Length: 424
Ligand SMILES: *Cc1c(COP(=O)(O)O)cnc(C)c1O
Figure (cartoon, protein in one colour):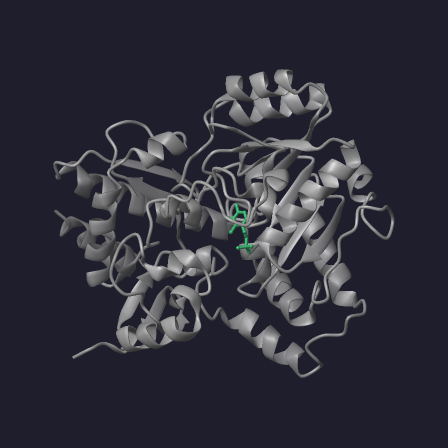
């Protein structure tokens, strides 16, 4: 019998390009039919055919406590009846800003937006406006949303589908984008000296999650900080994945390196469309209406989005033990997968920091995009389907990190490891 997901996918392709509203969801690289979800609770997602999956995507991060987290759902319900949008300021926006500032280091002021893409493109514009310079450096395999200037050697779906150049992005829009390999400080130093006084910003995922999980080598982020200080370059940490996930203060707190501007998304919205960018007061004051760097949004600071994000962040702030527990759960998954894979013939690398983890089937360390791309990603695709058949839902690409949620149980972890043991 043809599954309901298959039927829905057939139908979706008639009215939605590729049948999906974001490319990686289409399963194109792993093959097979994308699974249409009907509902989710805690660590589990349920598909349109009634199958249950242990979820390791968690909406790509926001569901850090698990799906349908009761306090967030209740807050949304209570708020919705008071109107879902004003287009005028509200007290809740101040509370949200104050909460973010109290959690994230080096954020004196913050502006809310509606996605990570918007946060990153606004932060880049701001860094350019503040410095009066045009060029910026990004890293191969890092993804900063789909604004034109960032679609150069980008990770996530661009890497998954091996898209080198994007039709529609003009040469003008990307000519000031310089790229360097992740974890290679010398390459950055060289770019900076070749483009003396022309670089506005260095933007980086302080722990990369869009080429699988890649952890910065010791000294790399510290080295970027020194270069930026010396050259008057704005250091932007794209904490859309890592923010409020690796610690209450994100990667800045966890790794002890300071950024000038920070972008947020994913966890910050508790599952609603929210992003934010913030940083040093001196820089943030350049934004309109204080300065002339223009940035705006009809639904920015939307009350439903704000109450969802606020409720989740407040939980994380008030219960710091959540981070230790997330780490411990993910450590257990890490150790379990390692012992299972050690019995297989395939070489593998597991990268992890906190509750971000991924597997590359590679015989050498995976520290940058070239390493990730040269791994046996056909094997990853088989692994993905093998896990899916056992009710474990991993990201459908080797170029994505997995996200562990707090709701995952001991039994779920054991089931995950036992499922991996069936792979051959
Ligand atoms: C997801 C992501 C973005 C883009 O966020 P959207 O909300 O999808 O626009 C930007 N940067 C990083 C590091 C991301 O993981």
